[in-house]
Image (cartoon, rainbow, N blue to C red; front, top):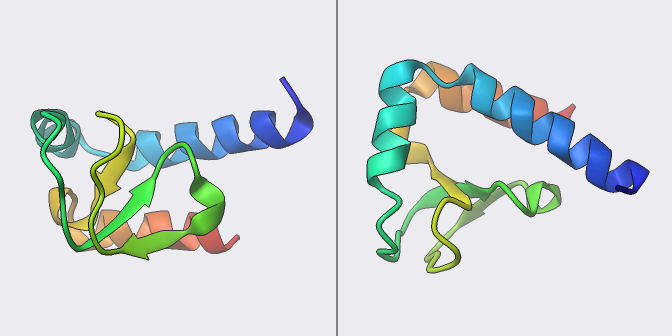
Length: 82
């Protein structure tokens, strides 16, 4: 694993650790392959930051804003900007 990939994996883990059990459950139930709309982050392309629009990628890749609390989302955004 390259240094960049390692850093990305660490950031992804930090983001996922911010989620409460309830938020994790909501994200998991969204992983049914449906296209989503609105703000989200692509957990496999964190360098793009917060994205807006449609996402119909691989199940489990996207973390939609509407699946987490405002506080959690703001903490995620802060991590992405750090």
